[in-house]
Amino acid sequence: TPSPPDSSPRSGFYDIDWLDRRTVEHHRLQGEVERWLLALGWEVGLAPDGSGILADLIAERGERWVVVEVKTLDEEAPSLARQQLRLGLGQVLEYRERLREGNAETER
Image (cartoon, rainbow, N blue to C red; front, side):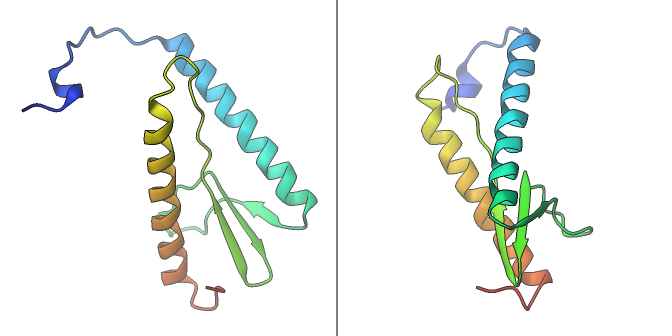
């Protein structure tokens, strides 16, 4: 049997305004998390060059690293919350392992 996306009709229509709103909300949340981490004394930025890590934020303090992945939820599609949670958790776990591979001194 086909997966739900494969069995759904394709309209070719994308709500660009909706995508823009989600992007703006994503960046707002990302900035809020960054300010919170900075206030707690973390250095915040992107992943080290060449790591291939596309996390929203990486925070470092001493030899400790924090991987941050921001997910926005759509009130009109609450069933997608579980999917977003699983996606974000999987990304964080993968990025954490990549950081460990390239930074042996990282606290585990």
